[in-house]
Image (cartoon, rainbow, N blue to C red; front, side, top):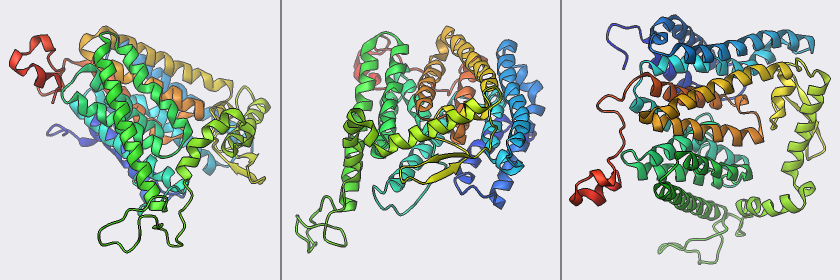
Length: 459
């Protein structure tokens, strides 16, 4: 909670709560600007302004070189957005589409500022808890969104919060890091990571299979001894399979592919639970079996062809203006699988960033990557910041995996994840962990013999 007598708007924790939690619940609606969104944007602007005003406070607690690197990266995005407004206008884009599209990148620019402000006031426990809550919301929302979008099952709700693959995967990275470090209840964290993977697999999205590299990559960077890391990976894999099988069975029952005979049921075991008496198609099984088809005959896969068409559209826009791009809000056009010409301001391809900002856009990305590597290196040098280091490494794998599919920053949930992960990483450099913080469980050798087995579980 904010300190007594201190304005809440100047407290980094309150600023992050407004921007992240507020955004998760408000930005899940349509693209129209309703009163709730207007209020959120005003509060978010006020929160960022509060973080800027309180800069003398959090700058005094932050290493000047580290803060400078992140502030320069943030400023470079702001400059890029200012240039992009003129570029968009030159390509016939009006101010409203530009604002709608540029808002995601404005949030990305504000992420380091909010993270720096929050890191100086929040505790490790607070940051871990908030990232876990937001990641859980993102995971459930992502699963619900894609189960409904792919017509895998008819759910009573269409959306919980803003669905975000990057934010959901950030929880996977955090849970794996906590389990690898050996903090208290680490096996519960490993199970949480496995549950997130299982929810991803239930959606039937083949690209989410690549997220398996996140826990594996974090385990590799955790170093020796390898046996505890292997246990963590096995638990995550086992829980992921269990959640996937439970979800697949539930979807099959809901679609009538499997009937369950209850003692009071009048239907026989072989009858369908569907209204027409015939089982619905096993859409999830079809998505999984299509992986082989994608490898052997990619031209027959409509999803792949759709993504390829969008990639070509982005490439054509980039080559038309390689230095400055076509600007945010630009309407890209392509022919979809139904042979219809469609248009949108975002695309399912990482090339969309180059198409919008051109080669000039590579400068802010290089500055962000440089600051991120600098932070990771500093955390690696601090033994007591191993959790923050592994969380940062795991999230880097998340961004790499999502970046193969599309450009992560197009999803506002990615900026929410960046705020929380950076705040956790920056906190690891600011202070020692006070009493009550998450601490590593004692090693087996340090525990009394009678409590050896109990303490090894961290429960």
